[in-house]
Length: 404
Image (cartoon, rainbow, N blue to C red):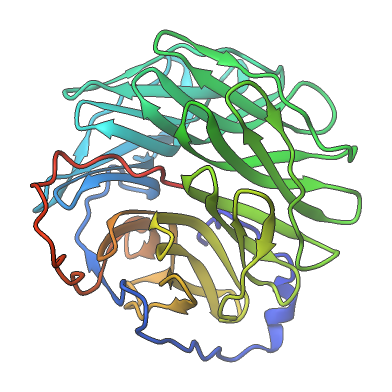
């Protein structure tokens, strides 16, 4: 059975579900999806959990692979023609489990990947590795908790400023965790936690500058989860109000910002157990109407402009049977993008990265003949009309704000 990134809360409700019809339109720039061949780093289980692209000819995807001795980190590179596995080191000789959850690249010579690892004598610890253009290396980080630490997402705006978020547990409930890279070291950032006496989790972060980042997740308030947003203004973190579509259980799983006054966050709501989309306009968060494909969750979103975003995740098509889900935003509406069902059982997409209005990559996993295998899809659409005025040639591509 495939281990889902998000637990669909009312899976029991699927017992009487035979099939869900998924409507789609082709109004958004991204209109189609094809499966890209991708290698597996392990012989037993493989999963790609995040991707960061700088151009149509350069991406890094990260996750985990298992050869039978336990999961280890997995990194793969796209060179414009094919995907290939790139070696990444284990955090320590005693590593029993290691997984990357997120990656952020600012150039082909500099990326950060984060996740967690365990040892025989220790519980989960945060994991950070950096890419220098030739190889990955482990970077030491703080140990915030004594029981359970995990980094879920990272967003970098330069080689001297990154924010990573996740969870930490010292004793009792899980608390949200925020760390900052200043070009030399990682340090834990002070921030507020919600007033609820329950678990708090940050699942995604997006930074557009050293003075604006947004992190999203969820907080347990006693009867279920409610959305959680934290905002960095260059000097401190604060918790702006974020709406919920239900009073029982809502989660935000991915966020992408293109400016301090424009962000999109995605996740899942208990109200129909379907996709949840929220928008930040610089002042407040509001729920944005999105298609209801059935029991579904959006895990990631990537925006290149206020009129171009792509979100991905999974949708139930029958009892305990899932397929990948892609939605696109054209500036006015969200639509479902037709995509092929990958060969195998239960394909799911965990992350997407867009470099233009007409080209994105989404990654995840699918259960195949030899176990869980990597899944990569290319999301494309028509090229925009050329400008009517003469412009200078574009410089080297700039890294998208993130990843999710």
